[in-house]
Image 1 (cartoon, rainbow, N blue to C red):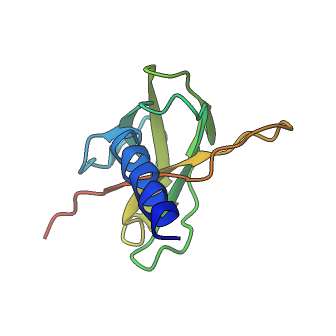
Image 2 (tube, rainbow, N blue to C red; image 1 turned 180 degrees about the horizontal axis):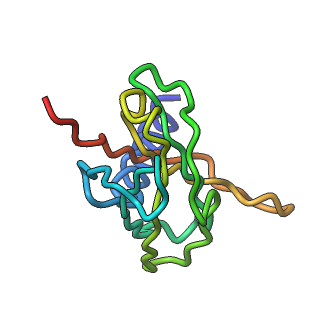
Length: 128
């Protein structure tokens, strides 16, 4: 049993090290070309060869969803590929919006699937 636990922890740690990246860490919301809407630019880099899809979400401080719009709610991203995308939030939701996150999504095809998902969050920069 101990041997299996050590193997599981090794796999868990190696997968965590090979998670995806999202930058910037503290994105700033700025006025967009649409009145009453703010925008920020983000970039995701896929360091996982077992995952090709990432889901984008915006959340408040308690991780409740906040309404947002983006071109890519689900991003298809090949191994070692990067993609830039914009996230749009209404002015009235600015005070609630705390985090923008990307979560790895397992494939829906039959066959082996990844056991461990990774979630990366950036915290919106707020003026204090």
